[in-house]
Length: 134
Image 1 (cartoon, rainbow, N blue to C red):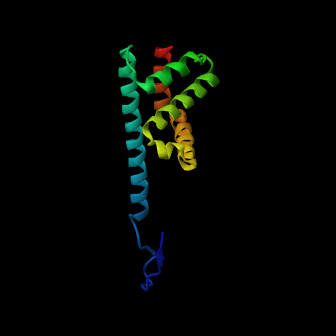
Image 2: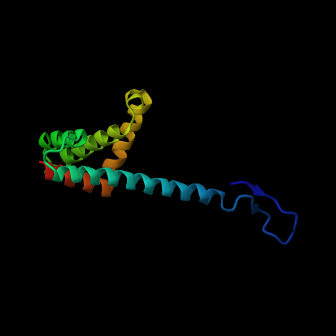
């Protein structure tokens, strides 16, 4: 935030040059966060719909099913690991192949997977899907 001294002896001596500038950035960040969660919730919803249709050839559903069958979802550590692995599968399914295979893409995928697995809403959503598929 920039500060400009005023020439008036009656003023506090400083006034902001950008009174809303900092808040705009924070508001946009929150909006991006909500859009991100909404997109992931939509993807999870599509996965749940595919889960209702047992004969679906959805590769993401297949990955979730394999993760569910290889995990002990009753253990908190294994459940967290399964959710993280499922989130990574979900993120990778949304990335283009050239981005997914790049070093930066792998880093983004890892970071987003950790974020998703720690988000209470998405964690519950994915864990619920895994439990149904098990």
